[in-house]
Length: 394
Image 1 (cartoon, one colour):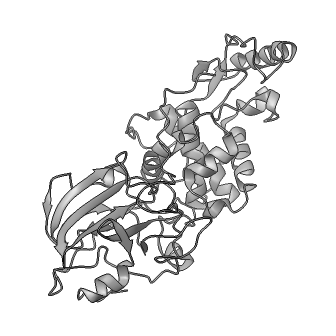
Image 2 (cartoon, rainbow, N blue to C red):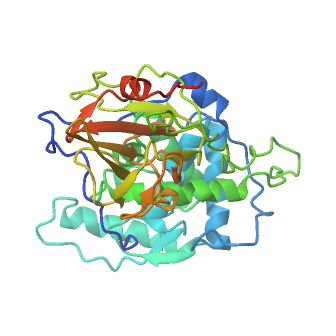
Image 3 (cartoon, rainbow, N blue to C red):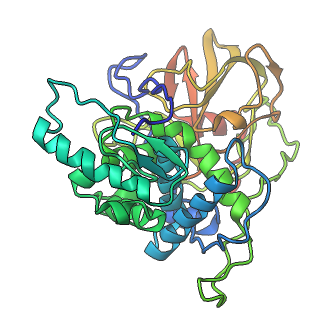
């Protein structure tokens, strides 16, 4: 079945940059912080009444797609995989099928040199896949024998055609396999999706995460019933923007805390990770918590593609000028594209609202990854802020 047009994003897990070691950002938030945040990776999620959905679209996703999204959310709720599991299941289906249940017309032509299936095996698989046209569907594709919301192939053991063409079954089966990924709860969202799907476009899932979050929020709070009409637990409330404001306190040296709270996570500067060292400090915070410019300066980077090597998208970087003959800059990471506010060239003041907290890229929960650079070399941010008069507030 043909997948939606997608250009895989460039891998940000680069080994180069200014350090001799990779500085990949696989930054966990503390369990306590996640538990306190209804939008955190571990937040519970309820079920949605698929016959009483909002009438408005979410981005480019309309009524049929939102109905399938609700089915996916319900399966995530049944499986107990929390908000993070629901987001992964949604973003995967968004990439594979644009949230439309696909049948397969069998028009795919097997490459003569293909090692996926032999000619004889493909002839059988093609016949089986074409049975999908007999079942209710919303789109037609032709990539091998892939069918359904997740492009699952009967020949690869995903189930029968009848089963896979049932959105509830295909979502539940994806989630079951997701749960078998070792330590999936602490892996990056796109990494988990790829581990299940084994796609030729391993980075393509990441671009759907923000919209998947919005779809969950759009369906939150809908009155819910099960198939018999009996009441079920409501979906947790929408993850609204945290508007906690900058309190106006700037240190005598001109610096501020970059987010409202600091939890003192154990994943601080220099902490060893799997093959690299963590070159920043994590500020755990709810979704869309404002991020503030740590000091006056000029924005030199505000992008999800022009990245500091080895860091996750998206990023903002601010040049704060010279201090004792050394150039000082700060780097802010893990926002979603729609959470970037400051633009390249902006002159910002300490405490200006420059972005919103996200969990984009190689991240396991909502937080700001914050770095301080001295002449392009990362230094420990917390002692630097404290030396510049900032009293970190919990």
